[in-house]
Length: 199
Image 1 (spheres, rainbow, N blue to C red):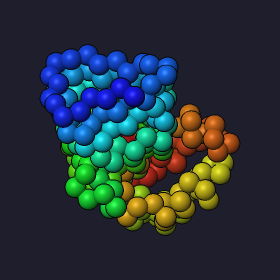
Image 2 (image 1 turned 90 degrees about the horizontal axis):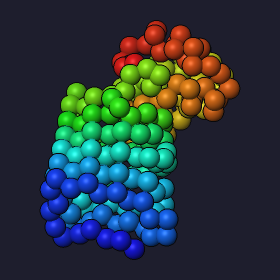
Image 3 (image 1 turned 30 degrees about the vertical axis):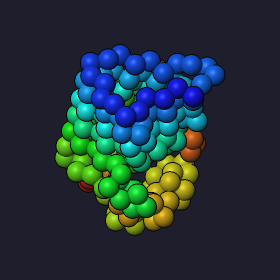
Image 4 (image 1 turned 90 degrees about the vertical axis):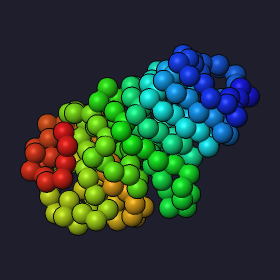
């Protein structure tokens, strides 16, 4: 295991790329104005009780199903592909995570949720990604549209079981289309009719 903990690191370029080690960032780690390059999978990465401030986080392979549940993120920029990630505070871990003033415009997000945060401080990627705001409260409204493929009955109705603190979810239209048997163009036709969406 390669561990960074109990210190503040400023203006460094950190590359996580070992093929044989697990990287552990935390506890009590602060990164400021750093570039964090992640070349490992989610199973080889643990970030716990860590603060990232004004950092660039760049993933070089798809980071799948990573939970940023014990990380405070402020003023960070994200690059690369993120799938099934959760950002922000989870109800079961109060006070352990937050996200504000972060920029995802150079990232591709799919099935990525934002919990208990102020989305007005975040910058989301544009089409072919799209972000649905307040999906849990609005799931019945969203279900009323004729989503193409199997998106409606599977993905939209799934919002009913999502954490109530989910304030936004971002999808990649090409990835969603491939997964649910449709096309990005058919998804866009529905997205263009919606309120409370950014694309």
